[in-house]
Amino acid sequence: MDKLKKVIEEYTDWSGFSIYIERIESYIEIDFSHSLENAKALLEAIGKEVCSKNGIELNDTSTINGVMKQCFSSMGFVNTSMVQQISRSLAAIGQQVGNLRNEIGLTSHGKSLEEINQRNNKVDVLTREFLIDTIEAVCIFIIRNFEIRKTKQPKEESLEESLVYIEAEDFNEFWDDSFGEFSMGDYSYPASEILFYVDKKAYLTEYKSFIENND
Image (cartoon, rainbow, N blue to C red; front, side, top):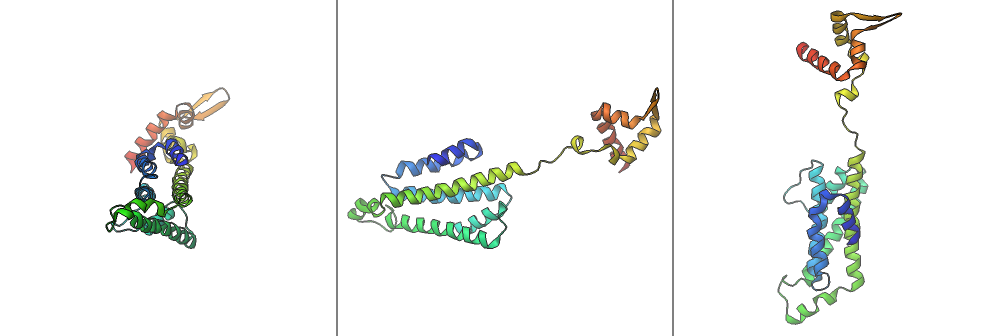
């Protein structure tokens, strides 16, 4: 799962999910059922993390279908039909992974010695690659979409960045009444305008004080 590893290296907040990748890769040859179990857990865990980061509360009994639907909705995929189709498709993958895991798992329902020896042979190499690659691709899609949308969100401007001189009319009148205008030859400027453009931090300090005292 090298592609997913690179994505996690790029977005380090997701590094905790590397443990699932390690388990998937470690058992893919010797016990594919264990790899499948962790692949399903990885997909569901990433979906839950996106919901958590986006402030979406999930029920303790939420199915993978519900998790994926909420995950995509929280990232702005508002087309209900599309969200439902995607979530159903992903849920179907997760369900089939779970069913396959039960079929070939070492501990589920008890296995005879012959079944234990043959359990990995029930899934051919191409099918294994397809299942793991599909889950990897979906995980990458979710993480990248979340991170890209996060960086595109407009940052909240500070008061210093957003305040426009003419919008603080009440304060400007108060300051000008207190200190008047300053003349320089043929030019004259009100005290508030000089303070705003010469020392905006001082202007903001006085402006905040004025607002607090007049609330």
